[in-house]
Amino acid sequence: MGRRHSLQSDRKLLLGLIETCREVIARHADHLCELDRAIGDGDHGTNMRRGFDAVFLERESLCGLPLALALERIGMTLVMNIGGASGPLYGTLLIEMGRRFGARESRPTFDTILSEAIDAVARRGRSQEGDKTLLDVLYPVQTEVARKSALIRIADTATESAALTAGMKAMRGRASFLGDRSIGHVDPGASSCALLASAICHHLMEYQPA
Ligand code: ADP
Ligand code: MG
Image 1 (cartoon, rainbow, N blue to C red):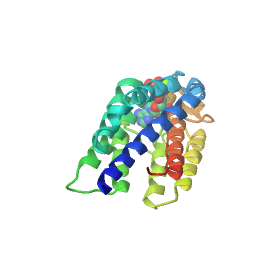
Image 2 (tube, rainbow, N blue to C red; image 1 turned 90 degrees about the vertical axis):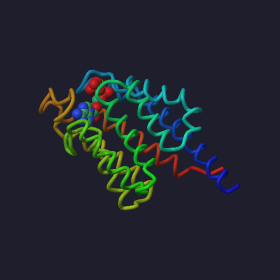
Image 3 (tube, rainbow, N blue to C red; image 1 turned 135 degrees about the vertical axis):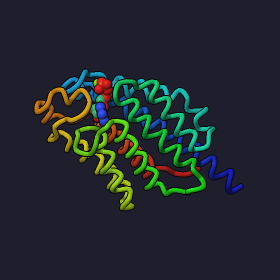
Image 4 (cartoon, protein in one colour; image 1 turned 120 degrees about the vertical axis):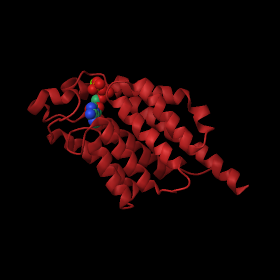
């Protein structure tokens, strides 16, 4: 009885998170395109929206899977539907998290899972913190998660970290072609990452298990 109850709660939570992510990306898609027009090719909002709409369409079957498999499937759907440079990076994050959640024998903590998945994104993008990418949100978020900070603190860190990318010079992706002219603009990938992280934290804060 108790176990069934917890499985249903997970399902409700995952469904809620998928809806929340899709909604926040749809609401900010035009703004993300605008950010990408300034230092890229203007498609980041469209790419992200396509990816999260595709995940939303699969939500019923995703929610029937164990969490590890669901995360992997979401990652693959994001790779196939976001496209661009950001698709494989967001995809890697989710796929690697899923694989680690599934590694039952080592029983890693959430903090370790997130940290290793972010490192995998960095390897995939051959990028590091300070390069003006979504990693400039992921690493600060990871630091707050490792400190066991309150969800509101994690959400605020994500938002503040995205804003800080305006002061950075892009070292990776299309924006790097602009060199110093990329300074003064917020990175679109950092912005989408902060929107997602913040929306997820707020959803978790308000979440009432069934
Ligand atoms: P594209 O650049 O192919 O048009 P998007 O516009 O969807 O792809 O995504 C651009 C975002 O992807 C950037 O703002 C940046 O955050 C991220 N990005 C691009 N290249 C890299 C990389 N090598 N490492 C990490 N992030 C990257
Ligand atoms: Mg682009």
